[in-house]
Image (cartoon, rainbow, N blue to C red; front, side, top):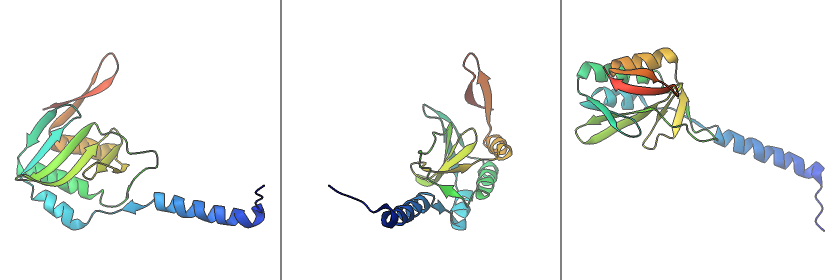
Length: 151
C-alpha cells in the first residue's frame, strides 16, 4: 500500500500549482516595430469565417486602424479555456506578405497567425475600428445574430 505524508506533500503540490498557474497566465506584448509595419501596409483584407467582406486600400484607413490597434500592444494572453472565435478577421498585407492578423469579437480582440492570443476590447474602440474599416453591423432576426456588411 502506498501512503502519502500530506503534511510534507501539500507544500509541493501548492508550489507546483502556483508555478503552473503563473505559466498559464503568461502575457505578451507586441513590439512597436510591428505597429509601424502595419501602418505601411498597402491593403487590409477583411473576412468572416465564411467569406471575404472587403479589401481596404486607402492608406488613411489603414493607418487609422493600425494606430487604434497600437493601444492594445500590451496584455495579450492565451486563455486556459481557449481563445474565442472572432466575428471578423483583419489581415494587414504589403504585397503578398502578411504583416499582421487580428480578429475582432463582440468584446475581445485576438492576434497572431492562428489568432490564439487575446484580450478585452473596449466597445468604443471596436466601433471606431469597424468605422475605420467601413464595416457596419446589423442585427438579423429571428436569432439576433450579427451580420457584417460593407458601407
